[in-house]
Length: 256
Length: 347
Ligand SMILES: Nc1ncnc2c1ncn2[C@@H]1O[C@H](COP(=O)(O)OP(=O)(O)OP(=O)(O)O)[C@@H](O)[C@H]1O
Ligand SMILES: [Mg+2]
Image (cartoon, rainbow over all chains, first blue to last red; front, side, top):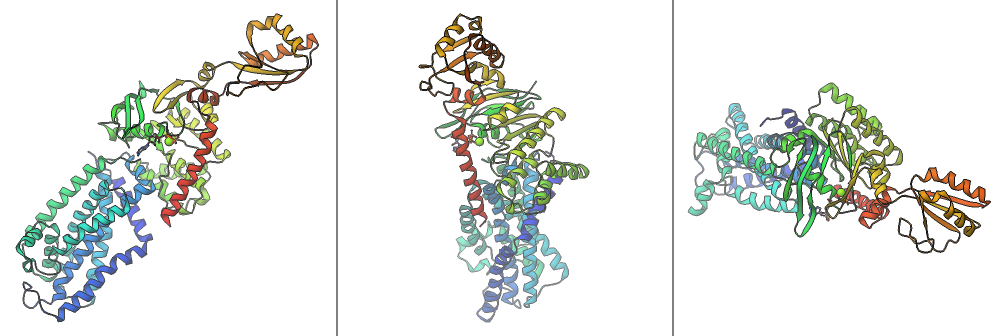
């Protein structure tokens, strides 16, 4: 198998071009995490604390990495929509008949999805620090980007897995939403998993986003439930698996 | 060696057999046409050869690569213009061409040169930097063709390449296809609903109906196979002329048709037009002067002469029982619907 960097580049570039031409979509997708951050963060700050949040950490500080995780999750998954879109408008034929191996196609799409998700994740992070979330420092900020990328790769690839199996837009949106909400709520983004009943707690442990949020928390506010090594390990394994799976499923796509 | 060789290739959709056990061999360097009514299976066939659809059974070799287990190698050997839209309407025309050029690995200089060339060909230079969603239907089609002709593949598939184009653009696209075929030695496989297109371009034509090949030959041989030329004469003194004809040595080279019972090639009966004679001949254009000579000698006045040579149209009708004209009308409607759906999709 030979990667075609030209193809990866131009597929990525096309995603970027389309992204920047659809500004209203960007604003719409940023609005949800923004409101979550403001209302939940500021609201709960005044109210009672969840058990499991270390002393001296404000709730909004605890919440911010979770909201970044949420932004990345939703945005990454929905980037699979571009495949559905391409199928509907016929451009998928041009892509699938191209003389490049399927991994390059998937890589281009993933790179595109990751770039846009990352931009939004960083934007939310900046907004968060703008409204007073205390971030440990600049190195923390830089290392958090590593986790953002890992989370984005995982869920963009998963979005492509869904997109390779679902042909219509509404079906895709329904499925990704049905999938994303439990993943999000059971990731420890809102509150430490210790607050959950035992059986649900186990679900959070098999949820890759849990490790992503945990890693982000370590980088941004210096607390961690597992360990950074485990976080990285889980995310690398999961994203690799998703890349392999999406490439395999892409090579079997039929376009008519 | 063949450019394409299929082996009992079949595609079914549920109970529907879209392509049925087709064995076909396409030579390197030829322009090969697939003719058939709507739903005959032409597009399905091409999509299987282009690796976009998997055959239900059977397989094919494209440029000596098996479409089943060497899809990447097949894709490296082919280019394709699709019947249905396949451009990104959110990009400009030039961006679409650029995408194609980069995916097909054209060098930077070549890329610029080819983009200019194909834009010239379809006369889209002044629209190159406009979003494709603001193109007219015909312009979108022209862009699709331009893109398909940009790189030089071994085998070029053209699924109804000139559908919806104005006559002038069609002509220049024909010229270009011929040029690609002759100068770059590109094997071309095309489907079309325009008989003149098939006649003008194709060295060989396969007629496909209900997923099966029912005739395959050069346009000239196909036309020959369904009958000779027909000369229709309108004369004043029909009986005198008939008598003269039957005793003349012209009879060696022709067959006389009984006006009241004979049918034209297109199946319409001709009984009402009194005074018409129908002669079935080879090389009608050479027979006409001889007939006129005879009429002159006999002092018979010929009011009109008409020569009908079998067309691919007649061949099509003969083999499928359907006239291509009906097909064409249906096609236009379809095209309009496609464009309509697209517009609604973008809002
Ligand atoms: N995805 C599909 N699902 C079910 N049936 C299909 C599908 N695609 C094509 N068919 C059927 O397969 C048959 C062949 O279709 P195809 O598109 O190959 O015809 P065609 O010869 O290209 O016709 P046209 O001249 O209209 O383009 C048709 O009966 C069509 O309804
Ligand atoms: Mg077709």
